Length: 457
Image 1 (cartoon, helix red, strand yellow):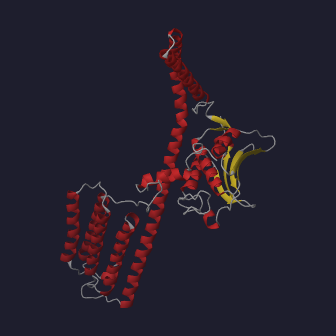
Image 2: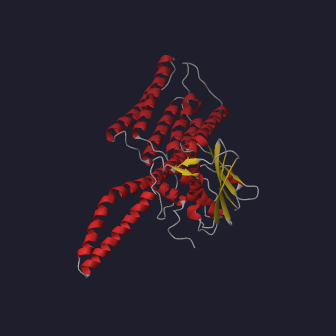
Image 3: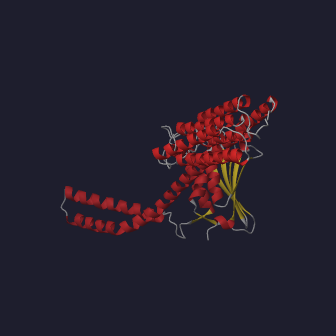
């Protein structure tokens, strides 16, 4: 039976807890719940984009009407443009522009922009107006920044506007005395092209935004894990410094306590003095161990032998029901390197070993191979290996082979961040990480460094 306090927390548990913290959507057990948070729009952004639209619409109306002399309803067109300008002024005075717009608020403003543009297009030729393609813009912005229900609602509003404009509108502004009558088939084609543009562009923006959000969140979790590992590594140096500082006062307490034992008469006072001496001796032993096993960043403790490195990686799992062993091999004529003590490497490989132990049948091997130029560490288990559909995307955030805990001994729910974090941390140290399945069965994860990137000076 493994000792309850000898094994560190499951790396996936730590990753999930960090993810939940960043999202503000963690459940009571630390596991992430709910969809990924999407980007939000500042009011300033909406106002600036609307001012740009107002300027563009004004220039277009004046150019067509005054520059080309085409006939169009100036009063109605300028009234619609003025309505947008009035809305911007009211919003600018009502709330600071640096604040984020709430989802429904941003959707309402973009909905107004769609309706205002649709009305302007109705006055100037409908779907046959070349500027009808601008209906795509608000929907694309919504797809990139707003929750799905708002993006879908705005998309349907733009589609409805495009269909109506293809059937009913005022004539396209043209040279006085001439009329442009485009056939219904052409107008239908323009409507279909606009609808296709809305769907394709919005879908593209949605997917790109979702991928960027996922990657940003996963990298944030990685930074959180790395910062925690670095703090834990620094605790050893802090303990050694505290032990050094406490040595002198503790020695004084010990000397005084021994004097009290010598001079105190038999009884409770002498017993208390003897207890004080024994406890001071115990404190001295604890401080001695702290000074003998620090993890400071000096030249001595900032480096470790390759065997010591592997032992520290597998030590938490030596009492597990699965056999975990470390193997070192090197080419003839090359010497095993002493490597830097890097918290990110320790965390990443411990996470990989933990995952391998969870899926292995009977054995996990951690194999270190070195030659004159490279060092390779491979984690191999004798389980079923990676599924083919997962193997192609393994190492990307939120790709997991056990979303419901299936296939593992512990039944742990996987989020797919463990491998991503491990891969990211190892690559930060110069390693090339590969995933695969062994010919004899089982999964393998390999990290390969140029020796100069990981070898201690």
